[in-house]
Amino acid sequence: MIPIQVAGRALAGGRLPAVCAPLVGRTRAALAAEIAVVAAKRPDLLEWRVDFFEAIADPREVLAAAADLRAASGDIPILFTRRCEREGGQPIALAEAGVPALYEAVAGSGCVDLLDFEMGNDAAHVAQVRALARRHGLPLVLSFHDFQRTPGEAELRERFAQAQRLEADIAKVAVMPQSTEDVHRLLGATLEASRSLAIPVISMAMGGLGAVTRLCGGVFGSALTFAVGAAPSAPGQIAIEEVRAALATLQRATSA
Ligand SMILES: O=C1C[C@@](O)(C(=O)O)C[C@@H](O)[C@@H]1O
Image (tube, protein in one colour):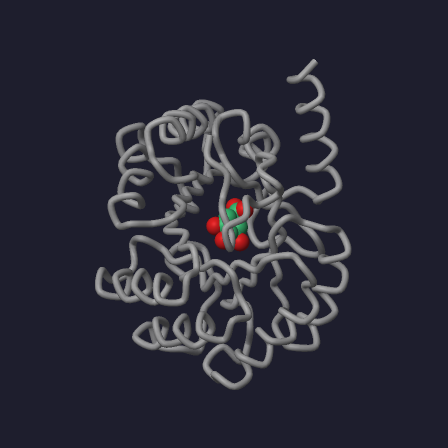
């Protein structure tokens, strides 16, 4: 299992899985209040879900918010994510054609440390974001989300492999299970991808049925789990304190 590297250092000191808390404030004031609470809980990574930000179409406001977050995050790195509506994100007041420019502006600000972009986006946009991430020295997560179902084994394998083929630094797959078998398949595909790919992988099954993956995903090769600092960004996320306690229990038991 490969840990996620940020600025040449392994996230969470190489402990796996690392814990990421999302930030979903809709305004600068809300984000400032949110990060104060969340950063105090010491996640290994913060994710700014900019699709929740009402002023997403105003570059000055976006950059000001990014600077606020950087100032308040201390030494905790920040993952920048515009989750598209098609893959479970919020509707945004910005045309799709403007999204790569949003990534360019924020990546160039020096206020974020990693980028997340859906691999299912327009191929030219994926290539643009791939190039700008490289130019700014930021690791790129190429992600896939299915909020309705869990694809079959071959498709899950292909999603992880596709991220690597598209030159992701990290591959991420999030699915919605309809059965325990779906959860089991997601974990199996994660284990296989973590063993066969040359990049770190992240996975989760969402909703109540998938919650177990947020606690034990690391055992199956997932390098990161998302946990609630102040507010969830997806169904089934568990409070950071509870996730940390469960991870500590698992780590103690595993090394006993
Ligand atoms: O892709 C992911 C994973 C996620 O959807 C989850 O289920 O924890 C939460 C999102 O904020 C993040 O970008």
